[in-house]
Amino acid sequence: MDSMLVKSGHQLNGEVAASGAKNSALPLLFSTLLAEGEHVFHNVPKLKDIDSTCQLLNLFGCETQHDGQVLRVKVNRLKSQLANYDVVRKMRASILCLGPLVAKYGEAQVSLPGGCAIGTRPIDLHLEGMAALGAEITQESGYVVAKTKQLIGGDILFETVTVGGTENIMMAASLAKGTTRIENAAKEPEIVDLANYLNKMGAKITGAGTSILTIEGVSELKPAEHHVIADRIEAGTLLIAGAITGGEVTVTKCHPEHLPALIEKMRESGFKISHDKNSITVHKCNSWSGVDITTAPHPAFPTDLQAQFMALMTQAEGTSVISETIFENRFMHVQELMRLGANITPKTRVAVVRGNRGQMQGAPVMATDLRASACLVLAGLVAKGETKIGRIYHLDRGYERLEDKLSTLGAQIMRVQ
Ligand code: UD1
Image (cartoon, rainbow, N blue to C red):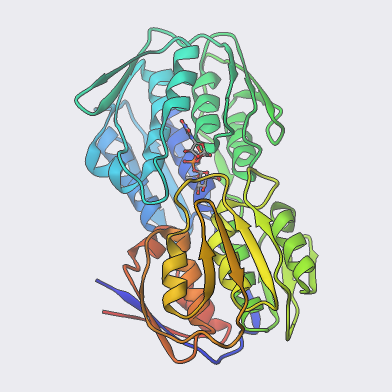
């Protein structure tokens, strides 16, 4: 199993480009199930989660081809509508096939995802939404079975903001009869990207990016071509990598307007951040202060950057209170940061970080989930000596060549067996 070896003491400087957004590409790939023919996506990152999605689409009977950053999905008449446990347990986002399959083919069987490292992450809101559109939902031997003759538009009020739930229902409602209104919808940029693609396919969706979505169902959708938006979480991670070493790093090919809370919090901490339309720069900074963050749905601070920001706060002057409101068990990086010498007091959903700049020391640590892995790589850039991060496969699920990108900026990082 691969590990990542990071040697500290190197300031990161220079320019690096963000890749396409994993969390946009995944729902986009599932949306192809809504229309037979060839769909073409540009700016698709090479990641394990993209491979898993292609594997699932292939099992359904689609043909996928990922050359460079271009991914083509040819959707033929499907031979199966079954998403089995082996694929779903590897990638929870597989649940996003439910809405499109039921809307287009009238039936889907999707394995229940089971336990998850960062919390229980139920799918009840996806199922309630599908039921509100008229799908008959049963549970059989660990699988959700959803059936319908024809989905009918309806009114859905999500009690919790759910990104995946909003995406699933938006896709399903596109082929439903009549109009669907989703209240308390997620407003993430990835929702807007999906709505844009569905509209290119012929859907009639308005309100994407606000908390009320209206979807007027159509009888047929056609394949289209699309450029996936940049990955705001990767861009934020690269920016923090520059910041934690006190260097000047510019992330290009990204969308600064997708990272309002991170930019605001980094400025509040003392960093100078500048940006133009498609790039963000963190400028050299010798000392920064502890600031408090609370994760919440977009446009508030993203839970997917909480672990990386915590790494930055271990090197701040003063104290930072980090509150996690989205997932109930997303502090597993805390114990590992403490093994490096970070001064953190974890409570249930709050961690108090007392900055002790220059005090951390490299050690072997274990990655527990995707964003925790990135946090440990960032910590390794400043923990004296060498940090070896195990279970790096988590990182490969969501970061495209992170070690190459950081090396370009001057980091000493390599993958070891
Ligand atoms: C997506 C992102 C993930 C990000 C998360 C929150 C993808 C592929 N993944 O995950 O990186 O961390 O948004 O920004 O885009 N919930 C329920 N019932 C449901 C669905 C969700 O209770 O049916 C709860 C979850 O347990 C969680 C909260 O709602 O506490 C938000 O989850 P959700 O937005 O659905 O996350 P995902 O779509 O799984």
